[in-house]
Image (cartoon, rainbow, N blue to C red; front, side):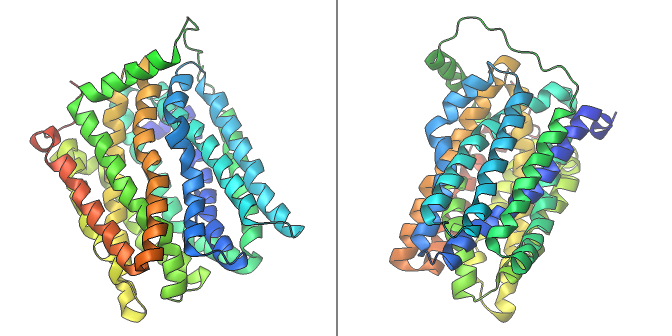
Length: 405
């Protein structure tokens, strides 16, 4: 049976697709709102991404232990509704003329906090809906959602912003979260509450840490994710401001450029499973890491006219590589961890990956202020490529397939 024939997984998949499409709006709109309407300098714009991802660094491990104690579907629904309310407050504040940077920082921090619960519960929930042998296909389908949103979202966001204004466009994102919550409510598979026996938070977190530390493949995947995430965040913290100010692109043009580059993500989502079948999941994993790092080397050469091709080519191969990395990294993680520890293992890898984002965002803003945005993009590119060595020099390099030990 194909994974989309599973009715409840299909509902989860549809909820994810709607939410991913809406979320692409705030990825573009929030930094543009800060940089244009509020006139924030590049360092203050980078603080927005820092605020959104800081909760992973502060609460990621605890949330994993809590998610192993709770039913997952109610957590997902509550997180979606909460994010809808927070994002919806931005256009309301703008309408009454009281929107400021402090409001944006508070909103993105709250969205990030709810996102910690959603992301960990979501990744832990997938193995409850599909059998282990279908995990690569299920994750490929979810990554295809990410790819489709990445392809359609930026141009759609750019058009909406151009037509309605930056603040008003965020109302569409709020509605997308509500639609996601409605689809999640329709899932019928019983979501049993874990054994409510006596638990100790620190001991539970330590159990997850021991499992990750003791599995050299899982550890390599997690550490690579953290290091590459740090340098990717250096890049992402400034790239929209770079395209708007240094290259001189309009919001619509930035969105269109993002759409043209992220077709690589859509391609990878469609063929990642077949790549794994042909060459093996382990080879696909470390090969994608190398491709991802090499692609980043082109970003700093982006400029006006034909030099925009550097951004397009870099975006295609970088997005292709990161989707393949996500499909096989998540599938191995979900297979390697016992069900009763999966929330904690997910939280550890999420904390490493997303906890690096606020640090990278701060570094990106500081480096750009000190040395300029193009030099900072070169530094970020070098770091992403260097991170591939973590997988190439690990036991992953000697394997064909990613099989839990």
